Image (cartoon, rainbow, N blue to C red):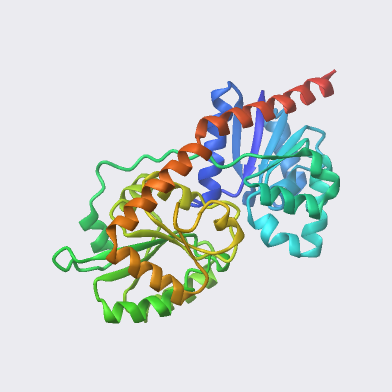
Length: 349
């Protein structure tokens, strides 16, 4: 079957990585999957032409608003995958909420990453409760064998101090919902007391205006560095050298970066929000903080207690192995696409 798959494909973002992984699952089942960036299309009319030109028989959208709205009214069966921002942020805006409700009326199925996301969607759109499935993200990491830590430190303008550099890596696209500046002041104060600790923020420049704010703040903050996005394989390799992966988001659907760090046995320090708390069990698979001061306290514990870091890393890896296998994810999406295939065949008759 020929499938159109719409998603927001900013390079090196969680949405792009997730979309590419789902595409691989579908192509492994023999489908032809045309993956397109939803941001390249301004109207459903443009997408109608794309469907016609591609000969698409069915479609899939990652993100109920940004991608899903473009699939309405074309007469082909489609499903959606909630991205996180749609349920956590867009749902609070009246027109976007209305549009997503219409999308869910037409969609044959919807996928949520967690039970709490499914429950939230069911409360907002009760008519869609019966078509929402839960499938966690499937994780498989592949660290680069050619990555050089000393080159990374140079790129981050960090001078080695006889092996005494300890890096906390915050991976995120530079946009307000990721709140990369949340910890900066508290971390800078700690760095002035302990010059060997650094917070490195790594990710693409998603919001140009906010990126300028981040750059200005980082430039004036001791112990905090900003680096551009890097290939996923290099990012995974870099994580292995860090004390912990950091997540300071205001909201999350399901952070792929957190799960990847867990799979790599790297401790996770995450802001205590529902999306993070759904995968990070405090003291077992990672650590959760509620404010910058608590973050520093927990970070200091990790620095002073290597055994804690090893235990959290082992717990995180065991959790990902038990709940985020890529094979289960593949089976789910291949099954759901077969339901679209049945719908396409019915329409053809």
